Image (cartoon, rainbow, N blue to C red; front, side, top):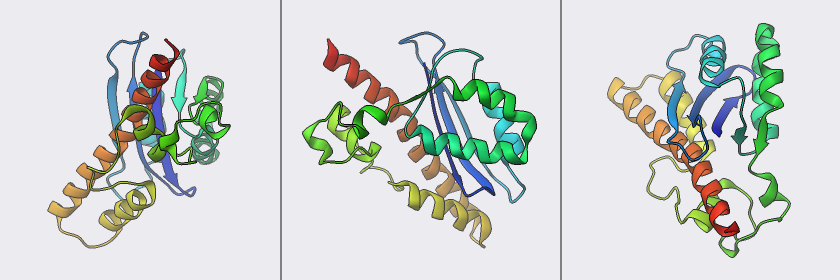
Length: 186
């Protein structure tokens, strides 16, 4: 099972990607992190790393496949030599949002929401409350602030650590949600 979270801002920047990949079902996942660290276009490096990290076979579990795939397609418009790779990836994506958006699975703690921020605590008892960065809008703004304005290096490094923690919660959160669903089916 592969769990991938890709998030971007428009067609200009890929901010971060974090993967947790397991070669076999229920085996410990390998962790990979890419967080752009300069004002140079990160898309070629991002796409190459993601291609290197993802095996050629197996499911790629994402939360909101339409959004994630859209960002990848935008990147491939600028770097078309990655399009064949993306075609393979697209066919293997599994959208973890689908059962919650369609209310095929619902836990009262979701409070009517299918967002990961609602589903994760309702199913796995874990939340984003302990993190300095707790949602995607703040993550994007903080990334832009520390990379495109004058901030001390210590603050830039602190925010990068906080972004990595937030991204880690997103990708590990998908693992915890899958585990909770499996447990409820037993």
